[in-house]
Image (cartoon, rainbow, N blue to C red; front, side, top):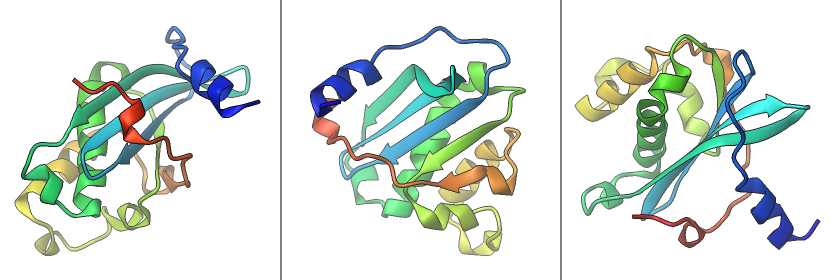
Length: 145
């Protein structure tokens, strides 16, 4: 399958299936963040909703860790109505996030604590935060408004 075909098929959104296994795929760049909520349907991950937003001037100065934590926070906030009461897996390419819930809270900034507190309200267990290298699609392909 060519790259062009893969991108066009990846943008087809499915309808939410009650009880289907969910996963949240997130990534952040220097200028924007984005997430995709997907469900397991016929042994394939099918996107059901996308989220993206541009970073403001101060957010662009955040560390990669902070931007990746922010995209998890903002995606969960955006998809809250679909995630509450359900377990799901988060896929990110930021390995240090796997230790976020194990670190001493004194080492976190107030913003990081707020984000971690919100994220921890969902039924995440420490072993469900998995790190996978995600196919990088340049952020300029996303329509950001």
